[in-house]
Length: 315
Image (tube, rainbow, N blue to C red):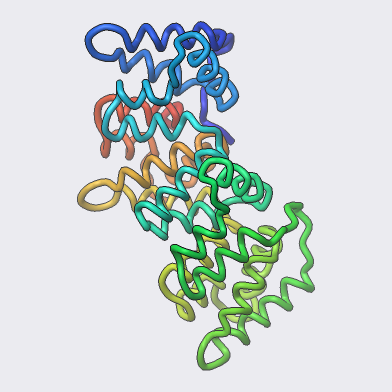
């Protein structure tokens, strides 16, 4: 469930474009006005605003925002301006090719539903002129590469139905491929994790625990390592409870000395319009502190104001 709050009667895209242009004029930018508008418009409204701005002022709104804003606020707002598939494409391209932050790229790919991935692949090609699989092939290696390539190219059922029989069979096959043998049969893990729906994989996780006394996640940590391990864990954790998974990612980004702002921005901006309400509920349940309070203590200024606007009421 989204935390995005929209005005009951939203202004027209033309009015918003005019207000933004006014905020940019003069000495310095009226950043509060920019946040008040953009943090309370959905993806369709933001696209219309960009179109109107281009029509009225013969300039790209993204370029103007880039010149008026700076630092982490600029990063967050520019990412927010894309639609969900466009955001994912931008994040994957940046983390995979430019930053070589393979964990972040893996998080995005392995947490998305099959239909999201198929649309993402189209957007990725239209934006960057290269198919997603090519960049994965070039920037990753080994079992991690094989897992990601299978995951983005294999159609998967998205319905809620599960087969108990298949779940038990898969649990036994995974046990034989991992904990029961010397050395791990990674191909079997890749095949099952890339072909099963989320509810089916979650059923396998439950069966594994029933049959062998501990979770599939524990077996993955024991039998695999590195980015391949993270890909498998992300897949099974998002099958089990995506809200809990992202709450943990956010906690890690804010825990200890310093804040991982790129992760904070990536998760908040990409999940606000989907399931941030569930993430917030899981965060306060596990860490006894609201996500809003955590973000407030780790950020400042207009950057803080923008993120908190996306997160909605402090609850």
